[in-house]
Image (cartoon, rainbow over all chains, first blue to last red; front, side, top):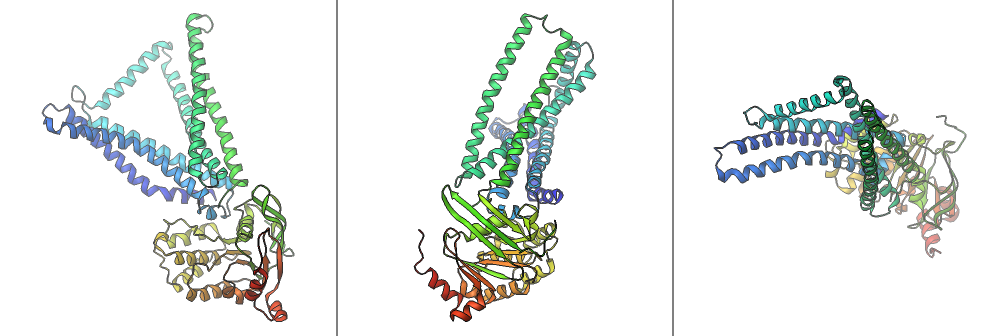
Length: 283
Length: 243
């Protein structure tokens, strides 16, 4: 059944998403051309404001693409579960957890695809944008990444390949965890608003999301303050942790954060499924 | 899922549902619907008819009481035994009519796509039309056709002909009868009692709080009282007020 639900969830969004993606890539190209014109000393000064405007709009457009994709997913979730369409959704012979899983997978597929399209759009912009010697700006960025890795290799006793792989994996895990969290948190806020509020469900959802974001900010502020204290202590008393152990400590910290994020996401998942099962509040 | 043929299609016991704490829409509602019957659930506005259907469909959760469909306690699994038509337009308006047929065929193994297409054509509903482009009445007809094209155990129709023109009502009611399977049961709620009276086997007058004020076999009541169900309804609810 998951496959069938997924088919309709993906089918409901993919056409508009494809149009948006093509627009994003086109805007990447437009942005690159604008940068090329800005760098051109022969550009007529009268055209300068138009070119700058084109550049700004390209950037805004590419960022808006990511935002609009998220909005499409959220609107689909809300319409399917908390408007009149829910009468069809919840009378299907499908488990509510399956309906919810399909929504998560849809969000994952579209957000990942959007991140890729976003990267392609930016790369296209950097490929058209000429650097100081005329070669594409993208090459400078690649060189910068190489230089950073070189610096890092000296810090970790030339075991650069091993640590680069380890940290890449850790970052991918952290990114995945963050993605799961953001999707779950958004869905949980909508579910809360949709099941608790009788009339203003959207307003309630936004208010809950705002409150959750505030709480998260407080938590991250406390965490970063604690982190600064620990780093300061390590600088003052270097004998606490030997240099060789520092990469391990950072790795454990990253994985610990990822585990905490996944744990909170699991709580949101349970919350959403139990609310959809027992607390539907349809008119 | 094992269906018990000896059990009634729908059995509800001591059903209670409050939207506001302490004010029950259904206080202690009990009903049993056997197979092969078309039941008209009739009552004034706000007496809990739609709420009852929503509880059975799983759209709402009862505060207490039990609901059994073919002897199986209501759950997500029993959704396959119920074909529910709510009193509102509930399909995704961006879908085309033929997509809707594909959707129902995908999710309901008992859906008869051929019968649905025939009925849609009979009522002049174009298959390649978006739902948003259809009139309210046409949407309602489409919904009813989709719901009645399933071969399931329990059909629940909430105000099925409310927005339909009188000319089409006859066709729709004959469709309900034509598609009716003797192993199944139909519950219809409506205010248009005159229109649905010819198809009803049983009726139940529902008062506030889900109290059943009068119920029985439609033909027998007509014989014994000499009145139609519509006349009887008017008599029972003439001075009926919420207490």
